[in-house]
Figure 1 (cartoon, rainbow, N blue to C red):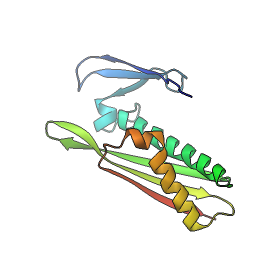
Figure 2: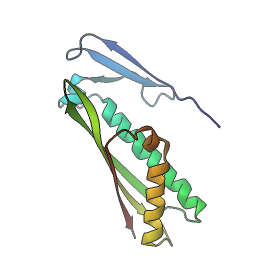
Figure 3: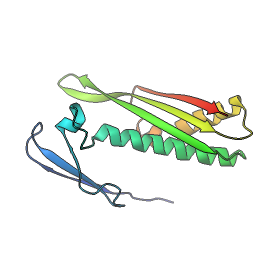
Figure 4: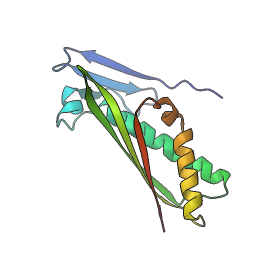
Length: 146
């Protein structure tokens, strides 16, 4: 099975003063604004590539864990995942140098060791983790809640 998922961006203007719009084929984002202010400043009306990447990584990890749990005979009552993506100065440009993932899960009948084993495997195996392998630091703090 293979699937192409599509997104598009329209940009007008210079780097700092210009404005862009991001759209996805599903319509989840439709001409959603982004720009310098939402990436480096305090503009909360728009998004930015790192925020979208963090959401995608958290979603991918969560789904990978749900499948791993199912394969091991467990079903999560809930999984809540957060991602923090750090954009750091790299010479004259920037790079993503850290992604911190935090996951809280309620999973009836699983023990801590099995939970952490499956969570670590999901982190290593999710397609976004694989695609982001060049990021120097990707951490996962997984907490099993009762």
